[in-house]
Length: 332
Picture 1 (cartoon, helix red, strand yellow):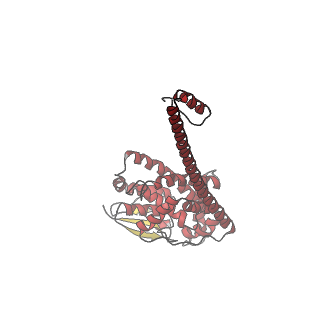
Picture 2 (cartoon, rainbow, N blue to C red):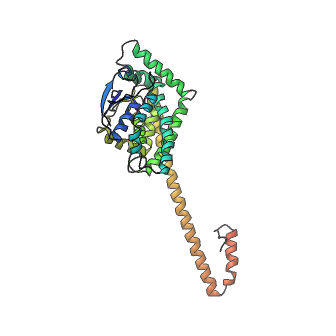
Picture 3 (cartoon, rainbow, N blue to C red):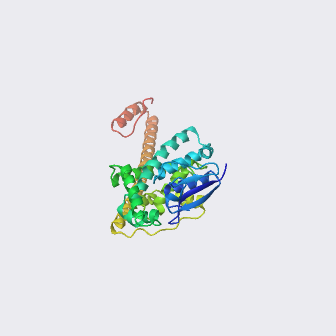
């Protein structure tokens, strides 16, 4: 296959691109071992399709509708890589392929929606980070017009969902991903990567390292241990260089939300540990109770056999059952 040229938004905050969609496509190129070169663009107008990301080869160029629509542009790029993606996912079992669809919906809907909301619909992050990152190289007034138009588009996509609902959806996705990653191995579905690892990496990288990431999203990464381990390992593994730590946005409301989100995450961890401890203590108590009852019955049975009173043993057992001391199986 002819080598690709990847047109993407340039990097920032230690990440290969300011765009989650561009980051996903580049991660996908690396996971599929595709040959490619990079053209960093300060505007989507520099792309042959008018969108970023975009893939170009000596034989063809990906094309889609013009305008800022990173999701549509990423879909077009994935279509161009369909054969490579099929090979990358070839090791997945039928059950894993079903999970691929389910987790794909979680990542590309709930996580991606939270990312877009945080970038474009949070007034603080939009003013301090997003507009400058995406349109800082454009002349006035385009550096205000283009990001404003995209902000309106994202707001329409979010619809009537509130800030709380958007981040609650992301929290539900994090809980499901945490459970999956705890027993899956180094990648989402075991010892080998799949195409969805690229999408997950892109979203988690932004939630952890982008200063425009809402405090609620940053707290989700930190409060889910398996997720944090995954992103801390995957990012330098795929892109060779680790992301740098960035300073949070200097805003009082932002800081208060960060503190509240961190406290919530710590409380979840505390409650989880307390629940696990309680369950363990209850299990130990139940086992000790069973052992005590068993020992008591053995002693009583031995006494009755020795004294010739074993005829009354059945009556004694029935009385114990009626008093709730222990349960007898129907077969006994």
